[in-house]
Amino acid sequence: MEVVIALTILGMITGTLFSIIQGSVRAASQVEQLQRENDSINRFLDICRKAFTTLPSTATLTLTALDPNNPTSSGQELTISGSTHCFSFGINPISYEDTILGLRPDPNGATDANGLLLQYLSLSRDDLIPQSDSGMALRQETSGLSAPDEQGRYWMPLLPDVVQLKWRFYKEDDDTWLEEWDDSEWPALIEVQLVMKDRTTPIRMVYSVPTITIIAASTRSSSTSTSSANQSTQSNQNNRGGGNQAGGRGEQDGGGEEKK
Image: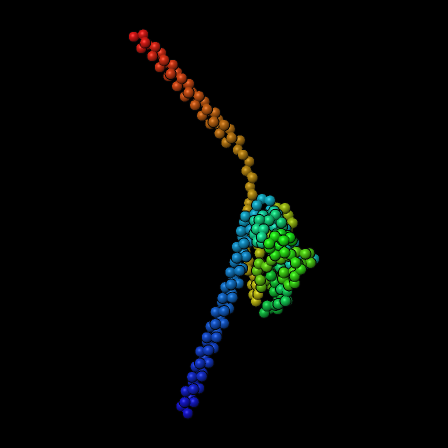
């Protein structure tokens, strides 16, 4: 009887320990997965920061709603033109082609715990995948995420498990945030909001863009510099003249010595 009780207690203890270990392993796995997801998000946000804060003066930004009739809930595509070092991916890291950021749906139609469709935040550029043989992979008809879209554009995934992506541009003159942009001028601020898998609170980041200021040359400074240069030239000429006079006196003294 005592043996049966001891075995029962041992089994209970073993089961409890197994449950604790199993819970700890599951929690550690979830923490690691969350950390990897946060690292991916931070890398993407850092790439955006570098792209927006180092825009050249030739760059233009275009924000387009995929459904113009319902821009507030429509998907968006951000096009960056004239920035050769923007999102340097692929075999041509320096490119003069337009860079497009947008969402691509999961090819398997996967959803998160909230029933929302999972998507990939992706990048598209005409020279992202070569069309001719250069020792690299060529464009070909594929299926799934690697397949071209309806417009024949190829996309490279940057961030998986995205539920929603929203861009907004701040126009300082009107003090408004806009979800569409086709102005040749840059916005004062750029906001990006990301809703990730199994989350409801968006991750928000705001970037500033460079301010280009053209300063006219000062006429007074230019004339002052010219006057200083003239004075310096005149002073050098006077010094050279004094040297010649001293040489002349030296010759006269020499003449006096000969008379002696």
